[in-house]
Length: 267
Image 1 (tube, rainbow, N blue to C red):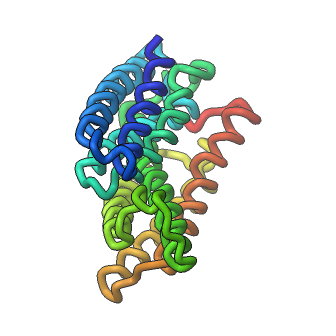
Image 2 (image 1 turned 180 degrees about the vertical axis):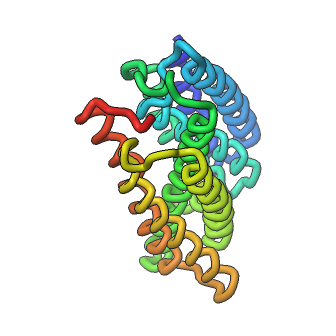
């Protein structure tokens, strides 16, 4: 039942946040915002509960579906926090809509045959990797949002839909905050991988590790460029998306081939 309820809560919450920013709903903005927070909070709590059950012994384990669902949870949680800034409520609405799609993966798929034999160290490594990828996925969505926003400004498009976009400087600050958080967790994940994984070749992790190292290097360059040279705009967005593409190929590309095609597990 909750598998169905959570996506609907996110959908209605995202719609409420987005509508609260439109001029024709200005008189109901406060009510829509409060409704958005209530629905988002309820959905996040249910989502946490279901994911906790899935990751416990006897659950589906750390599968591809669980990873997608975790990204949905992070999208919803970050959207809820972002919505405290009224200018980001349009973006929060979009993140919640995507979070609803990801949440539909909760509890689906076959039970993982590899995670039951994982040591706690490997479980920590995999969970950290999943959390890092979720944070950086949210960042990728914000990066695309910033790119669309920049294109609209360059094209001089002035419509009511502009209310759904935050000032570009606010969007970029959120993007770099997510980049810094994701970079930190990803670096910890890589360190834990080198510490806990005994044989990268036997566990089919060489290509994943190599692409993750490329990604963390590119994210590090982006952060250094921001802090030292004030990088922003399209240059920052394109570099972020390049780093995210490398990470995506290493994480989901590898996992898709191993689990769905070869029937193997990282563990």
